[in-house]
Every structure is written in structure tokens, then in C-alpha cells.
Image 1 (spheres, rainbow, N blue to C red):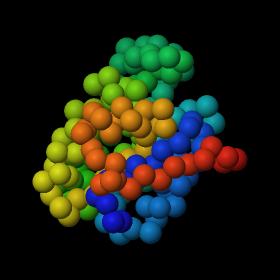
Image 2: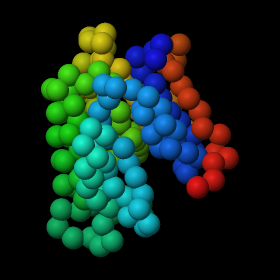
Image 3: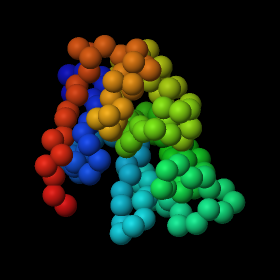
Image 4: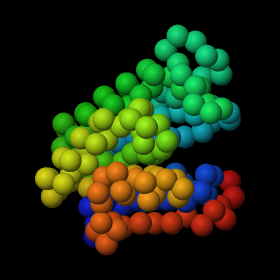
Length: 163
């Protein structure tokens, strides 16, 4: 990777995660979190171990919160943060986060840890970041972290992806 931050972007269901999975399969020192769907359920998956935890819930219950039509498990974000911290602590050189979305832009989900990862990446020239960001949030994401588009590798998914 030429640039230290690669952003994979595109509309919802455009193949961003599928592209991400193909991309990271060619790297050796990669860790982080991907988001996968199995049926109607969504999971967070640790890249290093393959372990996964259910991100969404069908019902509002203790330890969940709702954004739009989705009900999220707080415990899934806590788990993901620990997995990301372990990746950094274990010397992983390429950190992956799938995805940075509305929750994070509003200061929730993985936000505080993500901001710390970006700060660490800016001071550690060996560390690289690959992040999935929906196309409608891309400019807001770039502005929030004061990133220069010329320093980024932006891969745009067209939306013509069929699963």
C-alpha cells in the first residue's frame, strides 16, 4: 500500500466488505474487525482469530440501543474494542475497521478507539489503516480527521455488486 490510510467506500451493499476481504487476504500482518451478515443477523469478526460476536439484536433489551431500524448490542462494541487494542498491542502493522459509520461520526460505537488509532497511525510510520466508510459519509469522515485526500488511497465500489 502506497498510502498509510486506505478507504474503501461505496453505497450500501456495493461490495465494500467483499472487496476488503479479498484485499486483506494478501497481507501477512493484518488485524482488526470486519462486519459480516449471516441471514438477517450482523456480526463483528476478529480478523486474527476468526472469532465473531453478534452485533445486532432482534429486540430492545438491557445492553442494547436502537439507531434507525437496527438494534445494537453494546457488548459487541466492547468486544471489538478489545480485539482492536490487542491487534495494536501485538504489533499488527495493518489495522482494519469495517466500518466507520453514523454511530462513530456521532461519537458512539468504536469512535474513541478509532480516533486513538488514527493519532497513533499519524505518529507511527509502520502502521497502516484500512477503513470502510459509506460513500455518503466520506467527506464528513475526511474532514473530521483532517485528512488530505492526496495522502489517501480511496477505493470506490460502484454499487453494481450482486451477492
